[in-house]
Length: 143
Image 1 (cartoon, rainbow, N blue to C red):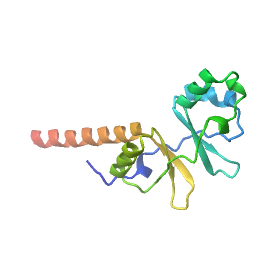
Image 2: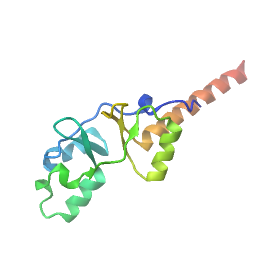
Image 3: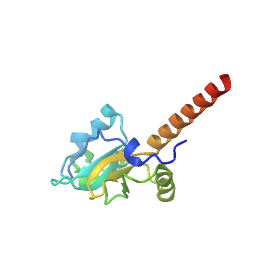
Image 4: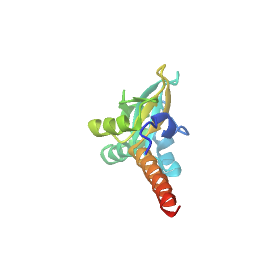
């Protein structure tokens, strides 16, 4: 397996984001529609200011009298942990384990938000690498 793979190579970049002032009712259905579990929150200057998980939505739906009147800034995790796009996948796994998070915004070298990575992305990459390695080994055994 190639442990030199970086976060940049496997992160998700086709992302929806919301503004802190976006009403929850305006984006809550996109979690189901797009089948994702986290949505980054960017300000008007496209600076990452938070992240919202499906758990955040569910928790607020249960405990708030009028959850649809809430804004993204009311339920987001402000200033979330982030990682750099050039971080190797082994270090990314360690970061996930140490910080017990389920999604990490990815930043480039100048501090711009460029993607999102999850443990699922890492597992998918590891499985693909393992299957490729196994296929090569099986081919060598036949030859």
